[in-house]
Amino acid sequence: MSNKEPIKPKILHITADGTILKSIEGIVIPVTSGTYPLYKAVADMVMKNKLLVQRKEKTA
Image (cartoon, rainbow, N blue to C red; front, side, top):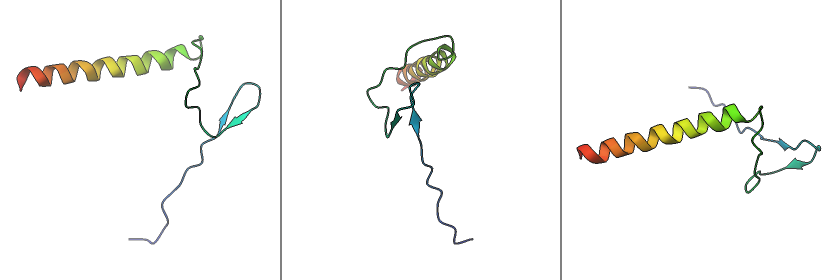
């Protein structure tokens, strides 16, 4: 084992106008042709998880 310190990533949120934010909590990112694939992927994951939870509840 090494004595390396854990990696602590620094996340920067830079808006289109160049503003740097510590957090994007509460910020709504508009759906555009560039952001749509990410929104779709997240929605698909949420729905898949919801279906898995429902199946688990049925079999319990």
